[in-house]
Image (cartoon, rainbow, N blue to C red; front, side, top):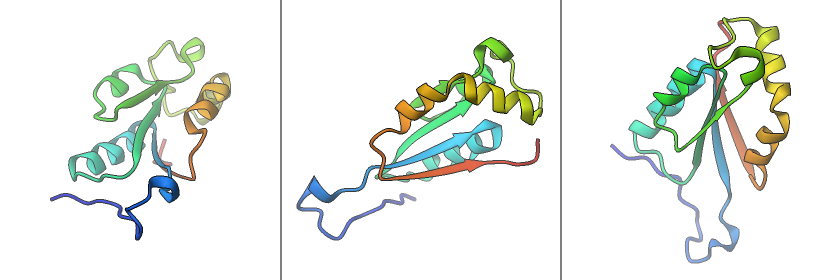
Length: 112
């Protein structure tokens, strides 16, 4: 089963939207993996995580480890403050990854 996002005027890429789907943390990464496995096309996938092992198992083409100084790639341990600090540590890289996007969809779990 394949899903795709199609635009009314495919004759011109001039008006094609740049859509990015960002999976944050384990839950967000799982959601992105599911979208990729269903064959969703027309979007750019990336995952962001403090856990290097989770990033390595992701099907997303762009994997961004964050908070390496704080977490050493071992995850935030469901600690929202540690996750926030990790994101702030790499805020410039995050902004660079999202640059040029017309729409950004963020998928994340809030369970901790």
